[in-house]
Image (tube, rainbow, N blue to C red; front, side):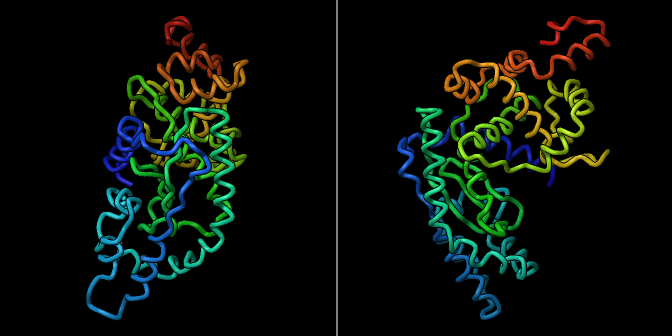
Length: 308
């Protein structure tokens, strides 16, 4: 994925917090699952080779708000989608019946929504759209709802955790200057609270790698966290070592977890995590990187407090 595309995507995510609809229900039992785009996709898929027209034009035209939200940066247009589907027909076929058991997941998601209502009474609950894209996104949030890239689902085992993560993005309002720390608190916070309400972790490999290389990674992160450059921590790497793409989720989670564990009022802590005013001061209050910051500041012959 190219850097400008990622930056655009990040801008869209943060724009959601400011521009997202406010008319979503505050009742967790009102969760809406929209699956009509899947039906439309397979109707188009089965027309391939039967006419000279691009059958996915109709898929795009009939698309829900979820398809519209998935178009920019992901689907792009009907021709782009048609090109990928022709190349990866067999891969798409693997997900043809993946939504057959979705009704059982609706019950699970309503329980997750209800758990968030307990932890954060101000929560809003957007609709969930299951759409088909170009194998370049498993899910995202848009001003219109949570969007799941159905073609990437091998089964429904992890979909509840993914929805929980995206649900938290709707509630977040993280302020402060753009820097790596801010992005990591955004994603790590969605992972942490998403796991709190669902009991599911969606980034197991990244977390295992992070825990196994904690000291080295924390030393590096301290030197990088005020910089807006995200590479090697979020979405892509320079290939300088064997690290996975999304270690920022892991370290953001660790900082959030440390902060949460220090607070006596856990419900208040959740609200504060969702509404971080100053990422640097939040980091200081978490205490997670204190040892590494002390070491870094000593190497520069500066005080610990000067870092913040």
